[in-house]
Image (cartoon, rainbow, N blue to C red; front, top):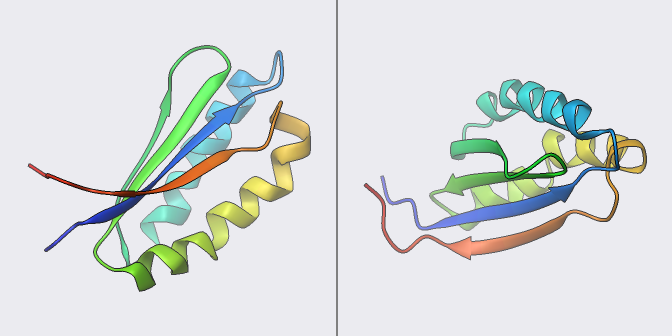
Length: 98
């Protein structure tokens, strides 16, 4: 398995919406588990309003399938209610894996 690419998303919750955003991300694991091309998927919290997602892929096709899949669509559906600003989503190159 050659995991060499990923996505890093940073999400800023509206005031008082951090717990709801966290719960949304916990439920996102179920969707990620259904994606054959997603090798790893992590949701995390940095502080009361800053959350993130980090996921990895073995191919660009798998990464694009994820970008065009259910998780980004679900995030778009709740963004106006939960997010203080647009999510910052960056493609990344994975340099080393243990």
